[in-house]
Image 1 (cartoon, helix red, strand yellow):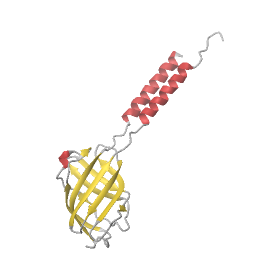
Image 2: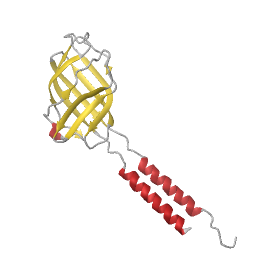
Image 3: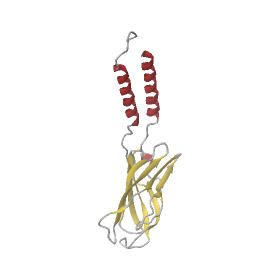
Image 4: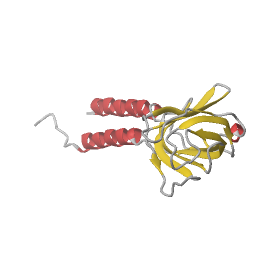
Length: 189
């Protein structure tokens, strides 16, 4: 019985260590940009696509996984159609600082209510990625009040804790408890 308990303890500890090392490192934070956007039509109510993005830079101090040192860095945006978006837009945006690449792939897009000739805003979902982190679901928001004018953009990412290591550990602990509480057999029976 002691031998079985030792083997079970070793297995639970081994699985717990492996599960802990496999734990995800999600991206948590947000970042914002500003720059010039040009649409295919000066009337934003009739516009169907972004023709170009220029002079886009990180406009605010990042939060979480997006460090303050990114402020002022150039950001590359991919022009895309929002009338009939070809999703995913991959990448929607990207920037690199040193050996770290930051980016976002849009997987969802909704044009906000209140669109007019001089207002276009949209939001959506997507996947944020940063070198050294696990790809993480996130959200994005875009707004401009004129083609050829300054636009603002923000993205945020956050993830729920990944429960696998704790679940595996608790399952193993339960198995140990069942093994320990099992009625003992005596040699004479």
